[in-house]
Image (cartoon, rainbow, N blue to C red; front, side, top):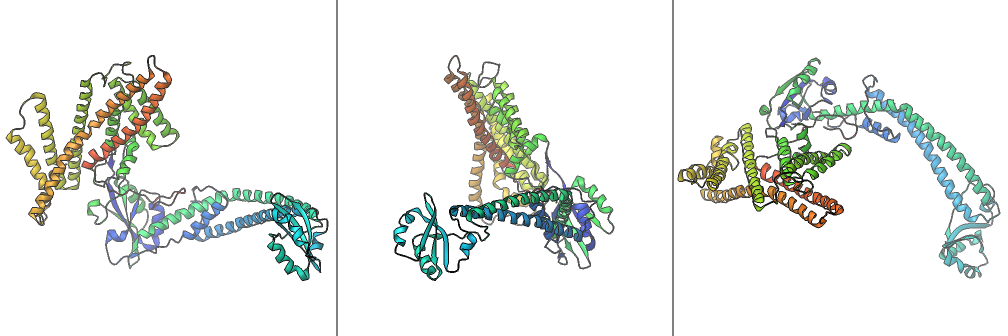
Length: 637
């Protein structure tokens, strides 16, 4: 429910000890590193080498894990005794052995694939009874094996009948292609090849590994494939056994290298002086500071100092939110709008409360609220969806307000309650209550804005803006005066009342810029042009007054959706008839829940972001990122 206070930690010591400091005190600790050169701001500081010396070992370790199909995970490496040289030697030797298995297996797969293709080709010429080797090595004639389109083959005999140097031997005729070979004298081979090619003949190169006829060669290749498959299976088994044997050692080496790589990444934030001392700066949660100091105290010649955020120039603290379980459910909504600045109010818990209440009023129904609770629990627990937690929360308040409205799956006569559609006066009352809720929330948001101004020491935000003390006085004076006048009939808006509580706050808001500069003791508080100042602020004040009205009226949608919900369910029961058709009732409830649930979710989010957050929340905070090492993603730095 708040932004955790931060401290700037500055660590210094001899350059020779920076690796020890990083590895033992900073990595996997709540330490958000920043560029030390910007914090210290001296011209006599030099940055460390940008390239990480552990990049190549890191790539080798990850490549080895991928090659052996070992899932990445981190294990303890404290007792492994690794050094930079020993881990590099181990990864190199293990990669070489793994590559040997991979190369041997791939060679066998390639041979099997080649044999299969050769068998497929030879089967097209299985009618040849002569030895293939003899056909390949004839001295005076050449054999050409190949295929051609079926339509060209059908007229081939006529076209080659006048060519005595070509003798055709068809071996297999299929629907689309005809497979054949032809014999031609080697002295006429060039002419014959060109002629056959012009007819669509596509030459096929049969395997040079032969053993007798085409059929006998096919048999030999099949037997060779059987041997290769047995050998491949043996090699793959050896490869898996090798991976299983080395798995623990490889993961240990990977964990060590990844840890050292993460430590190396921290060096890019450090600087060093000419006399060989390093400086490393970063933000730590204030409550964690004693633990850091105790760890650094155990390292000789290393010192650390801490500074408050106000004393650090040019570097704003990162934001780490602290919320209870209910607030954490709605934190994604807050992050969607933007993290709060370090010295700004965290609206997460406030949003959890207001969002759930407003949703409950707009969607008040006992039965449908219980369905939302069940659906939310299922999505949150079983599917791990953060939206499920929000559904469960709004479902609880929908159920509560369902008892208030006396509505169970749209039926308003089962339990007693405030029946929205019972009379026109009921609908009017709920709209009035909605406007009142909106007015209370708007005043609350102004109060939070004033609180932010106090924390930020911003007098303009405290006293002079439309959401400051002046704005709150003006808004309350108008709203309360109108309410009292309407209820009691007494004349509240007297001359003094209007002058002090309405006109004076308007004048203060009109002059907020020069007044704010005067309060901050700035010398340039006077406007450059009085005419431009009056014109600009006149239209701005018109917009401010209009926003008060529109923001308040906008909350009428809370009551309007409650009325709409009751009306839609009345339509469902009308369509279901009397006695009610259960199928129509079930389908009607499902449709109403889907449509209205989506609309209410969007409308409440709009109220939160525009009518409420817009009055006090500037956001713009940067997220706290500790230097942690996670094997499932890139190192978080």
